[in-house]
Image (cartoon, rainbow over all chains, first blue to last red; front, side):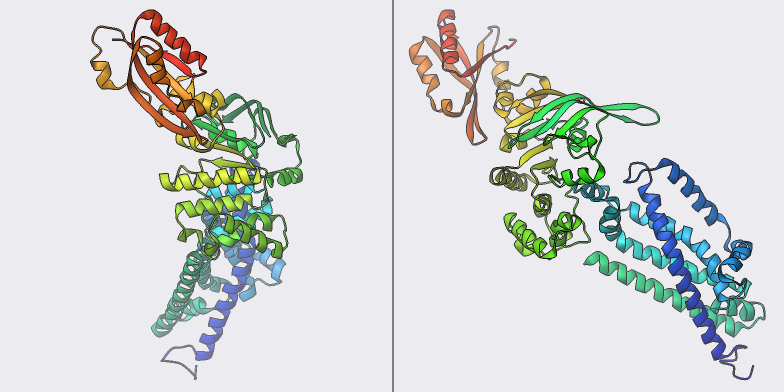
Length: 223
Length: 340
């Protein structure tokens, strides 16, 4: 531990690698869980009673599945799906391995948040779209999404922040990242300085995300 | 143009069945401005939504432009919907899009080239008098302006029918009048058939040529606006007419009747006959005395529509002759019963 910083047990290089790992995991899991969660959220909205693609059967299957996945604690999910993770990324440990459970954790969460955002869209607008003879797909991407966009931005901000928190726990599968440093050095080795610095880094990340999200959302709403 | 044949609509919830429409027959001819009036819950909202299949009939047929819409496949149905514009009470504009993009939306949906869209939207904006607002967002507009944008959007695909769902109910009286005049202009200029629903009889009076009165899921009365205004048959229709034409016998008069039973006539003038000096002719020709209890002239479709309540005193035979004279002149006259 020659090259320590501010009396921490970790080096600046370690901290910056961890920072990079966190960003990498958050970014990739956000992309994949977004790709999964957004359509699921849309489906939860449009298949419900009285909506454009009402389908009782589909809704009544999808809805509880999302609840079930959401109720599994992340730390359990992380370990429980290791076989699946191996099958997908070829390994059970490391940053890439963490992304699989992170996606499983965040996708249903995003689906729920997207659902809430899109349910806020005035039904009159959907009615207007139907009166114009819009197709289901057109209603989704020309009416539902644009009208809910400002709220969706906040949704994804919340989801991203949730992912930052979850990556910290991903240290359990040796995922690395800032949260892992906080746990391994700050918590388990009683290195207070490392604890303070890593938590500060996390706080800054979360603050930046929230401010950016708020800013973009406001910008869209105000146009 | 629009034909409802024995149309029924039932909403089924877990607990109960609600019959919103209990067998409606109605025909809207090409070029009509057809008004459907009724209190909330009468079924008028369901009725108008059947025309573009926002609601599906449970029974019966809705034929629009010669086609039974429920028999069409989704693609054909979408094509038909482009011929039916619709405007709404709460405008239903996209808040995330500019005025220009809102009006352009129906054209974008049907894949119109952007150059054509630009031209058409420009025309429409000019037509509704809001060219300067193209880049504004709906939130920056007043209610009346929003409804004009709604109208422009509904007209974008050159429809032959315009459905108006309580289009002026959220507007103040002045704005309402301006929007109604715009609808009238659309009807005249483009020969677009208009079907509108409202709970305000003044809307019917201002622009409609035909009216149907709905109550409890049924059309209880229909006819030309004149007919219904002059001779409402049902209580509901009478109540609606009374909201715009005050033909009540004044309370102060009723109080002072005493024991005698007065002869009271209600006379409706329509159009040119309102100009005839009827009262003076009668009192000269027959030995009767007339006193006016209530008088009122309003315009229905740019034609004077007069309403007169008079008390007649005189010899029984003379009174009868005078009554016959009025009838022979082709003027609508009815005796009103008053319980002294």
